[in-house]
Amino acid sequence: MEKQKKGLASNPIVRAIGVQRLVILIVLVVLYLFFYWRSVPFRRYTTLVQICNYMYYILLMAIGVTFPLITGGNDLSMGTGLICYSVIGSYLIRMYEMPVWMALICTIAMGVLMGTVNGVIIAKLEIPPFIMTLSTMMFCRGMGAVLTNNFSGTWPDGSQAGAWFRSIFRIVHGKTIIPLGMLWMILLVIIMTFILNHTRVGRYIIAIGSNKEALKLSGVNVFKWHVFAYMICGFFTGLAAIAYAGTFSNITPGTGAGFELDAIGSAIIGGTAMTGGSGSVVGTFLGCLLISLLKTGLPFIGLQANWQQIITGGILLAAVTIDMMRNRKRP
Image (cartoon, rainbow, N blue to C red; front, side):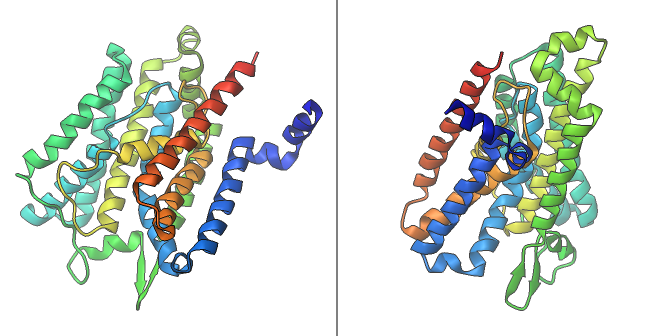
C-alpha cells in the first residue's frame, strides 16, 4: 500500500498538478457530469454564463486572500468592502459625474487603502488578523451607506455613457453573452502564480507564514512584506468590486457579508494552509470553481440554496483535515 502511495506521488503528472488539486479536478468532473445527467436545463449555455458571473468577484477576492492566508492571517473585510467600494464608485459617477475610468481607479484605490490599513495594524501592533479584519468588515458595512446616504448603487448599463466597462467581463452579441471575463481571470491566475512561486514577493510572504522569526533574523524587512500581502488582498478586493458592478445592475449598501467566506473557503479547499506557510493560486482557482459549480448546480436538481452551504462546509472540513494530517506527517 505504501509503495502504491509513493508511486502515485512520484508520477510526473501528479507532481505537476498536486494531489489535492488533482482530487479537486476529479470532483469537478464528477459533479459536472452528475448535474448534466440529472438536469436538462443545466446543459444550457446560460448555465455556464451564470457560473462565470458568480466566479468573477469571488475568485478575485480568493486570489487576494490567498496571500494573507499564507502569512498565517486572513481578511474578513472583503465581502462588505467589495460592496462599499462599488457603491461609493457608483455614487461618484451618479452624483459628481465622475468619468467611469476615474471611478474604477478610485474603487481599486479604496481596496488598496483598506488592505494597507489592515496590514499596517496587524504587522505593527500584532493585533490578531481575525479581530482586525472583523473590525474593518463592520466599518465597511456601515461606511458605504453613511458616505452615500444609503444610496443604492447602479453603474452605467446598456446604452448609457460609460457602460463600456461591462464589456471587460462580458460581450453581448445578439442574445448570446460571451463571458470574456473568464479569460482575464485565467490570466490573473497565471500572473499571481508566477509572483507567488518565482519572485521575492512570494518567497518572503511564504517565509512569513513558515517562520517569521527566522526571516527577521536574516535581515529581511518583515513588516514591509507582511503589509504587502494585505495590500495585494485589498487590490484584488477592489477588482472584485468592479467585477461585481460589471455583472450586476443594482448594489445595495450594507450587504456583502458572507462573500468573504466563499473566497476564504475557495483558497483553503485549493490547498492554502490555514496555519500559513503554503498555498496555491491555481488551487484557489479550482476551489472557487468547485464552490461556483455547487452554488449553480444544486438548484437545478431541486435542492435549496442552503444545501450549497452545507456541502461546501463539508468539503472545507475535509480539506482542512487533509491539510492537518499532511502537516503531521512532515518531519
